[in-house]
Length: 439
Image (tube, rainbow, N blue to C red; front, side, top):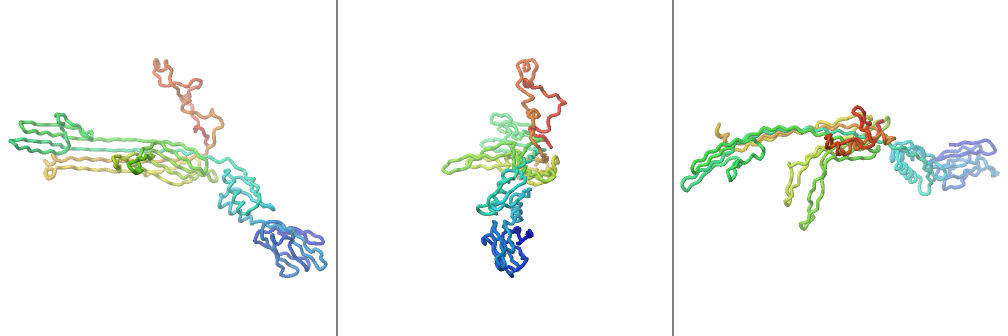
């Protein structure tokens, strides 16, 4: 950029970026053309009425052009700075597309604008210092805005259904004649050593019949079972995190795992199980929220367990999901399709005898097991801000306290309102969220 004023000599200011240059046209031929500090800017003179000046490093110097009488034809102040576009592009790539303004000074630069956190402001200052080089003075006027917070409500709903059927015929027959004994046993042990009946280990109902005469003993037990179960599990973790920061939640427990250390020594490590959640929310423009969410549901299972040095280490039945979605505050998305189905059928029979038509049923037992599980995860993020007054926030202890002797003995109450606090009426609506107010 060139700005001249009228007079005996052309005067003004020339602003250059490092490694950039421009051509200066003189009003008349010059005998001498030079710059005061060639380390900051240098020139090339293709003719006596034109000069090409280019920047070498940030700083200020002067450009002069003299005629035959050593009178000044042109006097310019030359200001050389780093390329501001390159610095802005670097800041955008390294710290994010925030409203950061950069203006150069003779000895450095000034940063201004608004960023979401102090870490971003410090990163912008550090990158600017590296870009300008050693000795540059950086004035940091960046303002840190309060970071937005995101509350994530998650509902983990699981329904498990199982059915079992069992039908078995258990036969125990012994006979003795002379010095010979022979017998036939099929199925489980049904009669104890003192003659008492032994219940089925699966909890099946049993019908017993027996015959005894001399050295002959015959007993038969019929086991039959038809069982069906339904289990419903619901977990509702509720988390709040600053935009861009991770948060996690676990509702469950930990079980010990022995770890060999050598020389018959063991240490114990703990493995987590239950309903866990990890998420990272990022608030975008227009109050849109990008959420990376990783829910996981795990249970201790005997299927797959191992035995090591006398220790039984259970397995984990785990279902997890990892996804990134973008939605507005208050909108919901569901993770479904986490369905697990399985069945098993076991038939045990006495060889050959179990294959006899009709009568072979007396030498066979069958067991059928069916399991079905369906899991649905519903996630709803909200942009929230802290409550202004603590009186707007209620805790469970605000509504219950230990009962007095009169309440417990005469009125059969297990709790009472805390002293000095009025119990909420049935129709009073609770605040939207404990500790936070939804936008």
